Length: 128
Image (cartoon, rainbow, N blue to C red; front, side, top):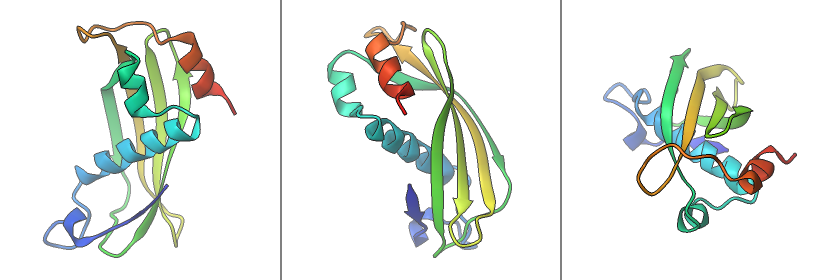
């Protein structure tokens, strides 16, 4: 997914505010799921919900106002109730790695308790 940096993404120095990268990672995971044929809104209405359980980011270099970024997401592992993503954000022009992230999602029921991921969803996520 491409993401252009606008002024509202940055701090007073024109550098992307560190918390903003979390939004980019979320958008990239949503795009990943939609490319696999899974619409997040439809998943919720069918009873499958998920939340970020763990997020670990390594900030390597800053992005700045006017930059264009490439945000990627891939699944590194799926367990009974969790999806483990490896995500990266690169500068489009220089290809430099800016952010390296590991994000874990947990499948939840209506009471926000961990619940197994439906097999059909696992199959969709792992489809190449």
